[in-house]
Image (cartoon, rainbow, N blue to C red):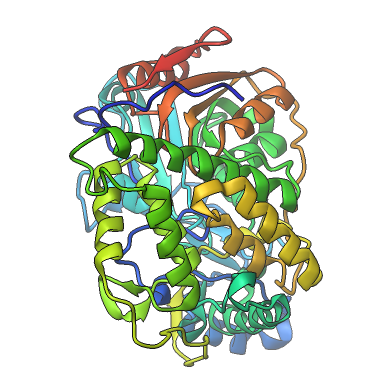
Length: 522
């Protein structure tokens, strides 16, 4: 891993005209004003039994918001494009994909897609692979995508909602169970209780979502991307994946390498890691990027915590959160638990927005303790809620068989995360370790054949996808080249003229930057 600059950049404002948003998910959470009830949830479900229960299943799936087409396949004539209701400059359509990829002639769901046509001399189609998990690629395209005017001149740009997300048979689970149990061993958390909770949650997801819930992993989504390619009539496609979207990109390259024209993996996941290595590397990334904020605040009078011991202030907040007495300023009747605090802090490090983080932490520090703990156990309500973030459990495996292992990993997490105490990835590990169905796409090193050169983009100081992941993925991906951004934040394309130009030249001209290329921090 490269050493970081002596000091972070003085400004964290993105270049004018760039569009960048944090991926909102189990792994990539956000805002202090996001109540615990809004956190996304997991699921896996039962095996579909076709003929004998088809009528009842269709009724159940319609109730769950799932579109069913019997015996469907991608139409030979391509998608039936219509102007999108939210933005008439874009076209929207639905592409049928199989509920179970092992039964390609069986039931299908409708995958929502959107397209903005090339404005000039068209090269082909560029598909954005959404992050999260839980980001709507359709919404991203309709409300301001991240791509440069030059790419819009040369490509039809297509976004889609992956299965389990948005308009594509969304993953839904019991709203009352979207509030986590206690995930901190030091606060009395029990891994046995968490595993029991995960089973109950998975059962609710099964009831509310239907059979598609068993088929939400990135490898299956990669198959849907290829169905989209066929429906568009493209022999090869260009792909841009960011954050969790790089999981789909790597799966697509592994399964359909000869159908890739170009592939950018921006802020890349290393899917070769086991659970312990995943947790440790995420914690190190949190430690590094939080230290960048602390350094900025120490030397910047405009920081709301300037002149104070920022790590000590944060430690006090973390302890209050562990006790259940820290209030969410946006919802004073609700607690902000320790992992919720860590998530909210880390979300500010995505841009990064250090000034806002200082203000947030000052407001929390100045808020009074709740007179009694506000923590309430998760209880089912029978009401469904959109819960796409637990798609994570379809792709990752965390082996935590008992309390002693969990407590040992927690001690290692505290040591690796430094002043931050814990990375929000701890929540994913804890809950997914109790998920009752093994991941359909377990961690492994992708085996690529027939793929063109791949461009990997990553920042040195990324709070969610550590730079060490990018160096590892580049090393074990044949023909991959890493472009390094010597700055702070999550998501590299569109961050500076240097990173944007490198991405554009690769996608348009298939020109890979020289090995070792670096872009200076903004």
